[in-house]
Structure formats: C-alpha cells, structure tokens
Length: 460
Image 1 (cartoon, rainbow, N blue to C red):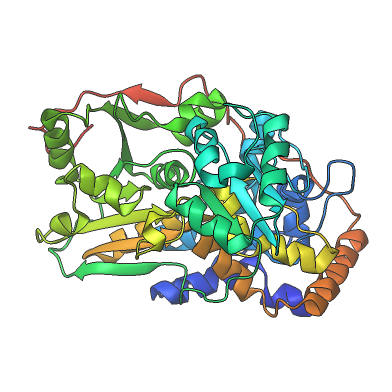
Image 2: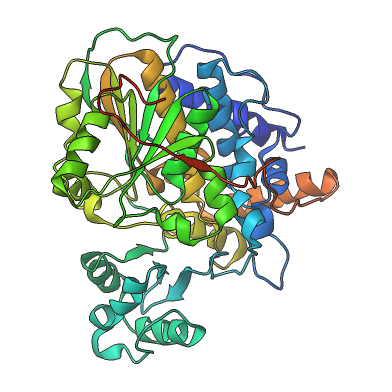
C-alpha cells in the first residue's frame, strides 16, 4: 500500500484540516475501513463514472472521495452525531447517477449537459442544460453558428463543437459569461481563493439555545443547496423549502426519486415572490430563521429586496449560507456554474489530462455534492458556534481546494501518483463499485405541504 499518500490524503486528514480551518476544537472519528484514497474512489461509485464509455473506469489522482468522506466525518464530529445518522460522504458523489442510470462518457458529462470542446488554443467546458442556453447560441457564436434553431441534440452539439474549434478560449469565456452561459476553461486556475469558504457580516449576537432544533430556511434549488439542507435535517434541524410558482426548483423536472431524496423530511412553502405579499411573507420567515441557505447569484435576491446583511444586523444569532458557482465578489458573482463545469474550472479535467493524456470528466456534476456537504459542515459549525455571519462557498472553490490539497499538480507527479494508486487498487482486488444509493433512497414523497402562519414563533 502507498502508505505515504494514505496518511497524507485520507478522509481523517481532510476532516482534521476542515475542523482546523473552522477553528473547531473537536476530535475526528475513525474514517472507516477503506483508508486509502484510491480505495475510497473505487468504492464510492464515482470512479465508474470517470473515463470513456468503451474504456475502463479511471483512477483520479486527487482524493475526491476521501474529501467527501472527510467533510461528513467533520460534520459528525461537530454535531456529535451517532453512527448511522449521516451517510458516508463518498457515496453521495454517485447517488444521482445510481438513480438515473448515468454512465461515464469521456468528454461528455454523465448527465449529457456539459461537454469538453476543443478550441483554437485550448479547451472549454460548456454546459447547455437549459432551453435558453441553446437560444443564446446565435449571440454566443455569431456567424460561426450554423446549428438547429432550438433544442439539445447530437447534431446541435456537433455544430457547437465545429463553431468553437476556431475561436480562442478567452473570447469564448468572455462572451459566454456575458450571456450567462455556464462555461469554464480546461486548465489549472492561475489563482486560488485562500480557503474553501469565506465569512463576512460576522457579528456577536445574543446567545442561542443549543437544545432547540434550528429552523433552516432553504431558498436553494437543484443539488448542492438541497443536499446541504437535507444533511442538516438528518441532524435534527427543521427545514422549510421555499419555492415560488414562477421559480420552482428546476430539479422537479428531473428524476423524481432523486428530488424526493434531497427534499425528504422538509416542509414546503409556496410563496409568490412576484408579489409584495409573497416577499413580505418571505421576509417574516427569514426573520425567524436560525440558518438560511441560498444558491443564487447575489443580484437575484437583491432583485427581491432581500439583503443578507440586513438580517445579519438585527442582533440575533443567524447563519446565512451563500452557495455560488465561482464566488460572490465581482466579476465572479455574475458567473453561472453547474457541477460539471465547476469541476473543470477547479482543474479536474486538467488533472486527468496530465495523468492520462486526455481530459475527461470526473464523476457526475462533482461540484454539487462536494459543495453541498461542505456547506452543511460550515452551517452546523456556525450555528453551534453562535453569533451571526454569512458564509460564502462556491462549487469551483470547494473542489479546487481539494485539488490543491492533494499536492503538486505537474504531469509527472500526477502520472506517478495515479500509477501508485492503481497498484493499491489492484493489490486490494481491483473492484470498482457501480454507483449506488442510500438505503431507502426512493421515498414516495420527499416533501410535505406547509401553510405558514406569520404569527407562529417557529414553523412546526
């Protein structure tokens, strides 16, 4: 076994690092039987999603599964959660794929909405997951666009690939971001943020009662935010999921079982946020929250008249979690990202290119579950720690922090590490598990109706 790597890059080491970053003086529980990051990657199901469809699953020389395991080890330590309350973090990386039958496909993400495309001087990851993404292609590609009028199709993707092949990466990145497309360059970032989270609006506040179940208001959608609040619910929080008839969670249009899993045990509050009445109800609910989780660009809540700093200034304990694609600061705060392109922005496709000779996607929308797990850790720590603060996490930075933690990222080092980790897996029997889901992961209904009474001290 590669004991040096195992000691430095296992789940317990990552958990201990996260707790140090937060300033939490708690011990880390055992990580489980796997130990080595290569075995964690093979066991969690994400390795089966990495590589070409007609080739073998590929080892990632960055300890992604170990970092996922470590995030929930750290969360269990802070929450003093008994064994079995929280799932194993690595298994959450491939849970959606298990429910939807996704498979590895090289330069095409398992979900099919993101692709790695050759350009004039490099590669980009481009996600076209929404109808209006395809409608933006004439403006994005100009006279080079000769594809179908609307809708995703293989013919449409071929036309996109042809159109971008003669355009420099930076031109595509600039134009795509102006059009709110989820786009990233396939390269290692030249500059990283100093950590996996950032805190602002931090203030002292009245002491909170740790015996009470915290009220979590979930304003997020899709995967990262709902996973964060679902994990908080497993720890005993009361979670209210807020949607608007004109802004339903986009995950409702996907796999129903996966949507139900992420929102199991939550109350659902439908508010028409296009009306003053709906916005007033939301403000009253936020004024009673212990934890707020939102996953939109900063301007989205500003357009609703919601300012986190206003709630952070009212003298009570409050944790406000802000999940973004690339961060809140300008210009990154206006950039769109989904889990697959965020992983490429973090450098994962480049890591795989250095290790194997060709860029491929790692796992399924890896930025989403990674960010959701780390956001849950930050939220629970902040709540237990007391005070008022907004904590910002981005999909690209959470994954990127794990990439950077793994050590040197030059091609020689990554090839050698991948070879060592492949040897560890072979010595352990060579088994690569398919994606799996948690026991009882397909409930009949994940959320229940909820009528909010502004006069209540807390929703039931």
